[in-house]
Image (cartoon, rainbow, N blue to C red):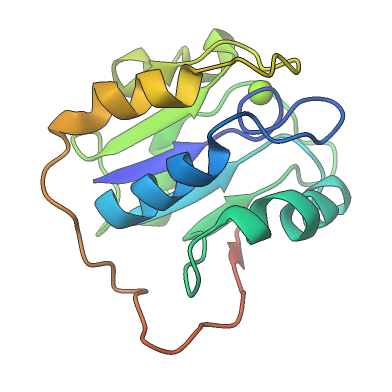
Length: 162
Ligand SMILES: [Mg+2]
């Protein structure tokens, strides 16, 4: 299984604060999913510092996102059609093995059957959405050994595709 995460309002709030339980959320996803990715309409200039300051310290050592999709130029339709990902990685992603987590229902309006809705995180320190979703995902099989698992820490890199 593959999972694609939204950034703003899902993993962090406007102040770049991480949603409660983000660490356990990421660690669990990386242990259970073959590929964990980010699709954000943020610019790469916004994403980089968020990754370095907020996400990277909470990710399991040696793990990296399979891809990070940031806004390219003027592109910002507000929709995240998963067919775009299926076309880009036909041997990896398909409609039966891909989930998307996003706080804006409009973004997954073309593929609602693959979506896991999540409320918008604005800073509530008692937010438990990640725990709710992990519970919901408990059906997702046994721990998966990712192709990215390495005994040695892996230097961070990600594939930005356009
Ligand atoms: Mg969002």
